[in-house]
Amino acid sequence: MKTLQQIHKEQACDYCEHEGRELIHVDCASHVYPDGSVGIHEMCFRVLEKEIVALCGPNGSGKSTLLEHLNGLLRPSSGNVIVMGKKLDLSHIDIWRDVGIVFQKSDDQLFAPTVLDDVMFGPINMGMSIEQARMLALDALTTVGAVKLSDKMPGYLSGGQKRLVCIAGVLAMKPKAIAMDEPTSDLDPLHAEMVENIILNLKNEHGLSIVIATHDMDMAARIADRVCIVKDGSIIVEGKPSSIFYDKELLEKSGLRQPKVIQIYERISKNLDRVKDKNPLTIDELVKTIELVTAAG
Ligand SMILES: Nc1ncnc2c1ncn2[C@@H]1O[C@H](COP(=O)(O)OP(=O)(O)OP(=O)(O)O)[C@@H](O)[C@H]1O
Ligand SMILES: [Mg+2]
Image (cartoon, rainbow, N blue to C red; front, side):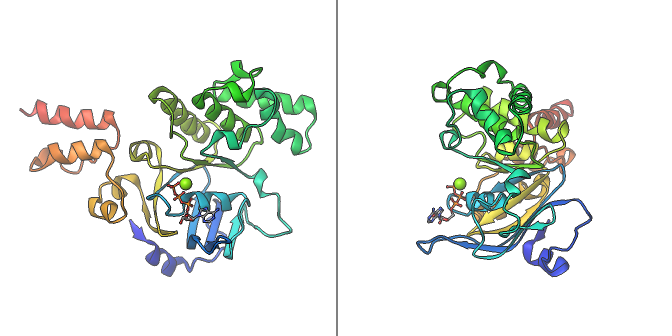
């Protein structure tokens, strides 16, 4: 695990090619809102191909502001945002094609008379024919398990169904990366699990990179390849879930708590050498660890 200061020293935060696998590079970007509020401050952030990155941080730390920079909805007041090697400026205003955003409030995203129309909107807007757009939309709705909702009015869907349709709407545009703001908030456990599986599927089967801003530490522990802790508009530390989420002091200083699985593990593993350093992140891994304890009597 490295602090951002160390990373900056090593890499100087420039946006030269980065092993050819870098999709997004936020290069020391700051954003000051018109009322003077600081949304992000000298933020440095990278997304590589085919990875799930979780942004974890307390309310108001800048997660949503960062996400909105990834597809040009917001422009940095200073610094740069580079997507697929293209710097976001007036000559590259179409990065929304490469990075899709699923908003926290689904109602901000849905507006068409039917679900199918809504999901077709993106591809049509990209210049595709109605038939092509229809095929992409049906494909995307199938991927999220919502094709049976095609003819419904978006306004009549449940919150969980709306979230699935929003993901399909972004997916239909065939982005390289998808940013999701609180993808499981307000969902029942079943829909939260569906969304979590969709995120994994988008990475594993479709080769996409997914950035999630989330307060759900347990989900981040289960699915993230990399966790970035956001505080006061910057990423203060990043690393693998197995190191970030086991650093209780860091999390508490950042206003966060350890995932439940880790809280339980830390209580049962205290003074038990045989389960030291197992560092489970999922319920299955925790159960295996408990079995080790019980098997040994
Ligand atoms: N449109 C806006 N105008 C002014 N200030 C804003 C605006 N949007 C966000 N901010 C401010 O920017 C800072 C970062 O907000 P942001 O919404 O990015 O945080 P967040 O980490 O997503 O929080 P949460 O976990 O509550 O969603 C906060 O201080 C917030 O008040
Ligand atoms: Mg937010």
